Every structure is written in structure tokens, then in C-alpha cells.
Length: 257
Image (cartoon, rainbow, N blue to C red):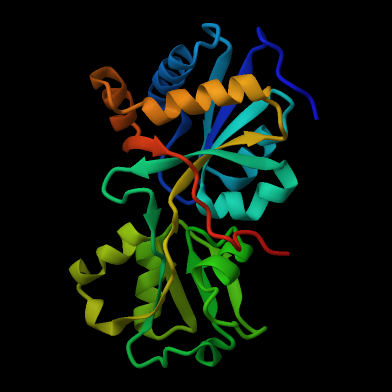
């Protein structure tokens, strides 16, 4: 594991699998964020760059590059890849409209019994489906799912919910924003919540493979925790739908085999 040299140009990788967004659209906002964060931390100007990738595979490829020192990722990505990438949480995001944590909700067709045995032979569809560990052990950790349950990733949540409502052998695991929108659907009466997770982080900013010196990590963490209190920083965070950062507070059993 290498340490980042003081004047080296390094990269912060933003990755949000399953959620809409294009790298070109996000780039100006993540550039502004990096500029503000590093200035507040006292890092040399231009010593940190930022890239965005909307896919799990693309984000993973970028994060395995030696210049990737930081990752801004949703919690399911952290659960799935923390061990592989040697991720160390530095700060936890306070997301506008959500806060620092959210609950995930399993939704089935009305009348489907709310017990794990009823899901045998079913497929769980979710934006977090790329992380079976998160789905099984974090979001649905209160249940022991049958071996016949499959987990699949999808960014088409409305289509997934239509399939649930039509009676296909699928259920949907929704983040808090998606679950809150269910009552607005014309087929909402055909859907029922089956299980809700305990609160889990929404997103984390983490160090990759110990590629930051302790001094630089400490300075950046301090800067992140102060962002949002000044007007200019608040605008920078607001462009990314963030309010502030807090010290990371992760569930005890966040990663499994």
C-alpha cells in the first residue's frame, strides 16, 4: 500500500450505480466540490482531481487505478467492495431530503405473505442489486432468505414495480425516496411493504487502499466536517444534493462473506 506524495495529483472517484446521471453532467459540480474541499483542507491547488462513473463496473475499474485515493459511493457499493478495495470511511454524507441514513423497503404484490419463505423462487430487483451482500445481510438482514431467492440489479424501478403489481415472481427493494413515491402510483393498491431495514448510511466518502497519508486524511476530514456552515460551501454541496458531512457511523455488521 502506497502513501500519496505531497504534490502528487490524485483522484476522487464518484460512483453511483443504478441512479440516473452522466459523467459530463456531473463533472462541473464535482470539480467545484473538490476545489472547495481541498482548499479548506490546505492541500496544494490542483493536487486532487475528480471523475464520475454511473456504473458499478466502471467505478470499480477507476477505483483500482493507483491514482484513485478517495471514493464517494453509496452504502451498498461500500458493503460490496470495501474489503476488495480496502476502503476506510472518512466522512458520511448528509443528503438533502434524506439525512445521513435511510431505510430500505422490500415491496411485494398485495397478498404476498410477509415472511422470507414466501420468497422462495422469487427475484429481488433493486438499484442495489449489484450488491447481494448488502441486500441479504444489510437491507434484509432481519430475514434468512431461502437459497432459491435471486438478486438482480435494475435502474428501472417503475418497470420493476409494474412487474411486482402484475403478479410476476419478483419483489422490489427500494431506497427511501423510491418507497416514499409508491402512494403516487396508479397501481399502488397492488403493492405492499413486506420488510423495512434498520437505518443505514446513504453515502460515504472513503479512503482507498490507505493511499492518503494520515496527515492529509485528517486535514481533509476536518475540512469536510466544516463544509456546509459557510455560504459558498453550502452552494457547492447543494449542487450535489448534499447538506454537510458528519463523522462516519456504520452499522456493526456491515460486511459479510
